Image 1 (tube, each protein chain N blue to C red):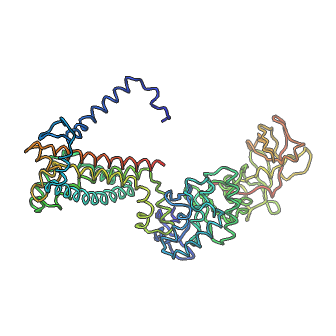
Image 2: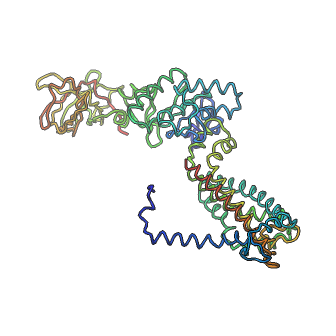
Image 3: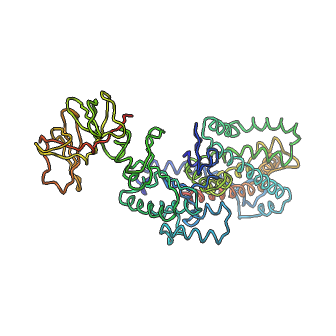
Length: 264
Length: 312
C-alpha cells in the first residue's frame, strides 16, 4: 500500500467509516462516564465527578477476591493453552500432511461450537469427575477454549517460517529440542505472544462457562458482575466494567506493539 | 539431502570412511552444510549464528569466542560480527553461512548450490574464495551445482547425476576430454554428434560412415565391431575451417547459417549435408578468416579430436 493509500477515498466513504467506528466504540465510553457518577444508581454524573465506586470496588472483599480468582484462572489457563497450542501448531506444521490439516480444523471446534452447548457438555462431564466449582475445572475449560486462538496465531507465524532454518539447525548439530528452543520458538515468538494475549482475554471475560460450572467457591469477575446486574444495579458494576475494558485494551495495544515489531 | 540425513534413501546405503551412516540423524552426522538461500538464523547476530554449532555442543565460552573469531577471520567478516543477517549483502551472508558450517570442524562440508543466488561477478569471486578455503581447511567438500563451468573449474572429482541416477564420474578433464556417454559430452560443455556405422579398422582406429560421408576415428579402448553403430562427439573448439585441397583426417562441407561474436571467440553454426547443423567455435584473434553467413566451407578435424561415446 502506498503512503497516501487513503488519499483518494471520497468524503462519503470516510464519514461512513467514522460513523461505524463511533457506533462500535461510543456505547463503551458510556461505561466510563457512569462509573464516575455521584448518585446511588446507574446514571450519568449529575453535579460532580466521584470516584466513590472505584474506592468501593477496591475496598470490597468479594470484588477483590473475584478479581484475584479471575486473574489466577486466566494466568494458569493461558499458560496451559499457550504451551499446548504452540506444540500442536508446530507438530502440525512439521507433519504438513492431510492428517495435520484435520487436526488443525479439530482444534478450532471449541470456538465453533456455541459456548452454551459446550458449557452444558462440560457440566455433565465435570459432575462425574467432581470438578464442578473448582479452580482446576474452570482452568481446564478455559484452557481448552483458549487453545484455538493460540493454534491460529502460531500457525500463521509458522507459515512465514523458512523450514530450511530447521534443517540448518539440525545439520549444525542441534537436537530437535534445542532446535525448538533456540531456532523455531524465537522466530515465531510474535505469534505465540498474540495467542497468549487472546487466550488471556478469552479467559478473563468469559461468563457462560463460569455460570455453568462454578458458583460458590469459585466466583470469577464476570460471574460477580452478572450477579450484581441481576440483583442490584449498583454503579460499582460500571467501575468494574471500566477496569475490565482498560485491561483488555492495554493487552490489545501490547499485541499491536508486538506485531509492529515483527514487521521490522 | 540424503547425505545430510534429511531424506532417507529408498534403497542402498551411505558410508563415511567405510562407516555406515545411512540411519544416522542429521544432528549426529557432524557435516557442515551451506544452503541455497543461506538459511541464516534471522534473530541472531553474525557472531551468534557462527557460535550456534558450538553452543549446542556446550563448549566453554572462551573456546567459542576464539573459534568464532577464527572462523569469521577465515571468511574476512571480523568487523561485521554484531550485525544481523538482514543487514548484510548476499555475498556477506554466504560467507557467514560458510563460517557457520566450518566452525565446528565437521567431517565433511556439503554445499547445495551455494552461489546460485549471486550475480556473475560475485559468484566468480566467491568461487575463488571457496577454492582458497578448501586448500586451507583441507576438508572434503561436496558441492552441488547446475553450473557446468563451476563444476569444471572447482572440482577434483565430478559426479554427473541425471534423474537421480549417477551417469558418470571422474576428474574434470576425464569428463570433459574423454566422456563415456553422449549425455555427459553434451552436458559438460557443448558437443556436436556424428553418427554412423563402422566400415573398417585402420591402425588404432576405425572408419565409419554416416549418410554417405566417411570419417576416421581413434578407438577409445577395443575397436567396435564392423557394422556396429557408433556415436562420435565433437567439441566445437576442436573443429577448424580447412582450405580446399589441404590434408585433414576428416572433412565435412556445409554452409554458414549463424554467426555470433563473444569477444574471445566466434561461434558459427554450419549446416552440413550429412550431419545436420554443427557448431564451431573459432578463437577471435584468428578472425582474419572469419566466415560470413551463407558462405560454403569445409570443416576438418583430426581422428584424435572426436570422442567415441555411448548413447544413453
